[in-house]
Length: 77
Image 1 (cartoon, helix red, strand yellow):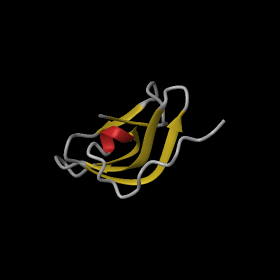
Image 2 (image 1 turned 180 degrees about the vertical axis):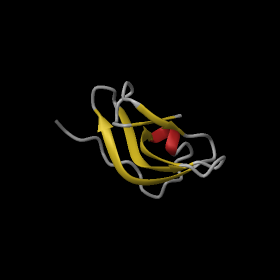
Image 3 (image 1 turned 30 degrees about the vertical axis):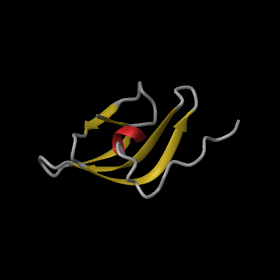
């Protein structure tokens, strides 16, 4: 998946994360126009050890719902 500069589908990609890479989360963002949750953090790639910081889709970062911090409720207008 692409690691993006900001929480949006069309934001600039700053790197790529692969299946099995570790992600350290530190913030969640909800994009109302896309009805999508993003998580910000640092991805440590397994293949080369490189660290990439940015936003990824929450469901891609936590595909099995094992993250101990569930997504917050959707913000009201």
